[in-house]
Image (cartoon, rainbow, N blue to C red):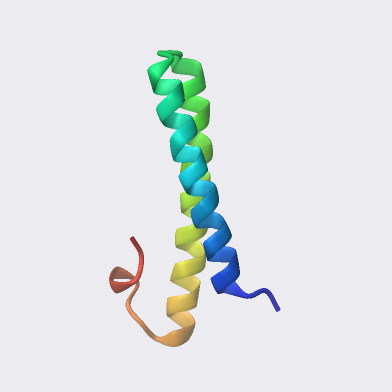
Length: 68
């Protein structure tokens, strides 16, 4: 079975890196690159939130208290 804690840590690192990529793209003022980098960031965040939601459902916790 996959360790969700490790997976979430990896996703958080990927999100940090992608946020920096979005910032660099914004500084370069290239709208197409900003769009693509932002979409990738959104995908990582969606996966992270989905994992957290499923984890909370299994443990009986409310998602509102655990998802950033």
